[in-house]
Length: 269
Image (cartoon, rainbow, N blue to C red; front, top):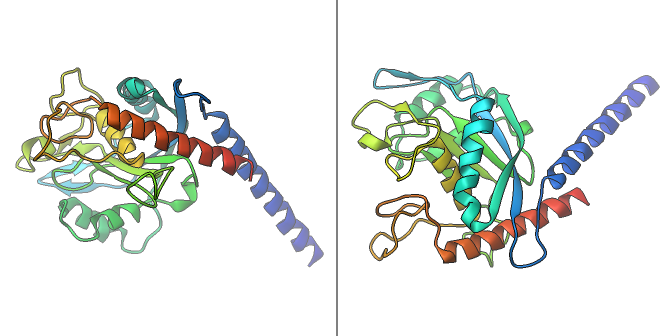
């Protein structure tokens, strides 16, 4: 009995030690200027979900993205897009991981492949694919999956509310598909989504979608197409592109600062 108790205590100590290391690593990647200007840097844990295959219109969609793609192409492009806002993102880690152990995985994967934006529980089904043991509790977690539904390229969770007053640090989870049928309006079979694209905007890319969904994490919304007067915008609307408005930059910096504070408080808990 005593031996088992000692072993249990040792395991708890090891778990605590690893959690402390994780906390220190995340906090060490935060840059948080004290003045109104300067770069705000936030860490992201990238999750590349493998061993999931989806079939749509005769195309078998597998995970083809690699950590090298994230490190050398996607993240630099995300940071180029966000530089005008003075916000930069850095990889806390890039994890290759399998799906969660759920009994109806194959059926759920088939349902996701058939889903569209209006499919009930589409978001819930996709989120259930992720092994929650690998999720970081306070930094942004960005998940790559093969496909997220017809005419869709990604989605994000904003956290506790859609306004800064209700939710000063935004959300910490977003999802991006590496295959898409959005350019054809789901008429043609899905295609591999390019890692990045030369400007101006044509069909978008994985890097732009990551930038867009991280924008939702820090509470930026889609423009109202009926009243929109500024175009070529990262957050979509009519004639989407890569630009951020001055109002979006102000809000994004406020929420990014809130996320930085949350990470630093978590490290000191």
